[in-house]
Length: 411
Image 1 (tube, rainbow, N blue to C red):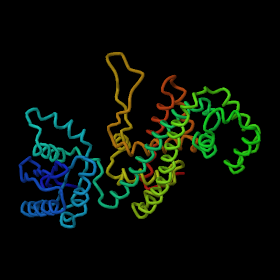
Image 2: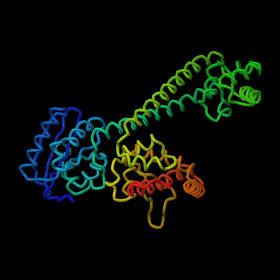
Image 3: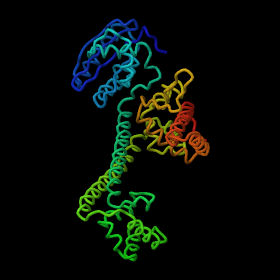
Image 4: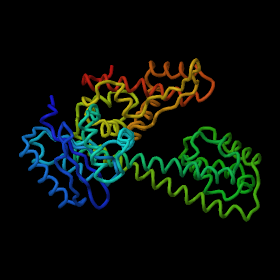
C-alpha cells in the first residue's frame, strides 16, 4: 500500500537534447523544477537530486511519469527504473500515452504550453492516481524484448506493404495471375513471374515446357502437372496484353519487390530467433501460460508479454482491453443508436496487433472461439470479418487476463 503523504511525484518532459523535471508532494507543493541534459551525465545528476530530495523530506515512495516519446524516453526510463539508489524508495516509472497527458491538460484552463508546465501536468497525473492500473516500466530486459517484438511488427508491415505494391505490377503484367495460386508469393508463383517476361512467352511455351517448369520450381510437390500447366496457359490467354516496351520496366520493378520481400522474410527469421533467446527467463511462468493457448505461438506470446509486462497492474480484463485499445465508443443520440461503432485504438497498438493475430488463430484452432467468431460474423451484413475478429479479440483478452492472473494453463 502506497501512502500519498510519503510519496514523491515526479513528471519529466522529455526531448531529444534535454529533460525538464518537476517534483511535487501530495498537496501539489513544488519541491523541484530543473532541466538536465538527456544524457548519461544528466540522468546521474537527476538521480542525485531525487535521492537528496527523498531523504531530506523522508519520502518512502517515488512515482515518475514520462510521456512516450519513442526512443528519446527509453534511456532515461531504463536508467531510473534500474537505479539501485532509487530502488530504496520503491521507485515506479511509467511511460504513458501522450493522449492521456493531453486530455488531462485540458482541465487546466489557464496554463501555458511550456516544458516546466508539461512536466507539472505529468507529475499531477501521478499524484491523482491516474497511473493506477498501468504497467511500470521494467527496465533493460523488457526494453530489449520490446524492441525486438516491435521491430518484428515493423518488418511485417513492410512485407505487407511491399506485397500490396507488387500485386499492382503483377496485375499489369498478368491480369489473371491471382486466380492461379493460393499463395501469390509462393516459390512457384514467384518463379513464374520472374522466368517468363511476358504473357506471350507463357502462351507460346509448349505444355511440356510448362510442366517441366512447374515440376522443377515446386520440387515435384504437385501431382497433376498437366492440369496446372494448362490452367496457367488458360489464365494467360484470358489476360490483358501490353505493348512489349512496357514489360521490361514492370519486370524490373517486380524483381526488385520480390528481392525486398525475400530480404524482409529472412530478417523476420533472424528476429524471431533473437526474440526466443531474449524472452528466456523473462517472466517464464506467464510465458508458459500464454504459449499454452492454441494460436499463441512463442513469438506472439513474447510480443504480448513485452507489452503487458505484469498482469497484476491491471485490475480487470476491462482495464487490459482499454490499455490495448480494444474498446468501442458509443454513438447514441436520444432514441438513436448507431449500428456502426468504432474501436478506440487509443491504447497500445503493438499489444493490440499481437492480440488480434492471436485471436485470428484462436478462431481457427479453438472450437469455442470458432463458433463465437462465426456467430458474430453472421449477425451483420457489413464489416463482417473486422467486427467478428475485433469481438473475438475482446473475448480473448478476457481469457488472457483470467489465465495470467491465476497463473493457470489453458485447458
